[in-house]
Length: 350
Image (cartoon, rainbow, N blue to C red; front, side, top):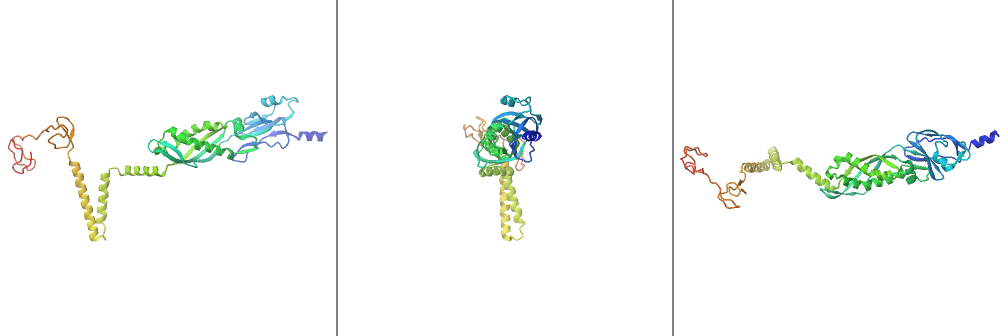
């Protein structure tokens, strides 16, 4: 009799637990090994785990982390489904799944093909991007219904491809809606990552998952756009082109003068550079000394300085007045007579 009792009780499971020794297992089906669960058995659910009971393909009770005694009081759905007839200690047949709710980190994503985006400055451009993300199970019931099914083991690889597809398809929309110019993308990786995570999470949550973190590590622009950016950067570094040209001419003259092996040719190059430098300085001085444009005394339009008549309305412009008595010539210093319009010594117009 004692042997028969031991044989019967050995067919019942009284302790249910799972210790995860992997890094990528999301769902693990508890191995019953042909046995049945005893009512009153002890269930241990560790932190970052959930235990889900499935009865004949129908999802029943979900247990949070902690130690639980399986009874009709804490298994209301299973009790309703089974309608227990044999008391609290009767065994029952059910499948137990442990769902891992920890974060699965450092998952990589990238655009296999260029993603089209519209930029206000460059128009339609293609970009490539890559980065990483982390996710976890948010709703175990939804995840098991939508993704897991009836497998005995489910790993990150089973859902990673779907998340990557969602990321790539939604990235172009996120960039377009953020309205960040292409030139400013590199300076806004953090803001764009946060915006993309917020935009992508509703799609991921439909699978019972959630994105805990989303990082854009790099966004590469087309070669043509990068060359255009380099040109603009060079123009910004150069600044004033006239001053830059003067500096280049001075450097060429200095190198020609310091060339000991140039001989006559080096001297000619130095003289040519010096002449060009002098001519450049003269032009700069002339440009600096040229008077600004004048305005017509009649219509007020801009006219070249020194004009006697307005090219717009034809009105005569104000002429120089005769000098007063006791004045001196500004050119040679000769004392002038009152009313003189030209200096009698140097002929300078007054």
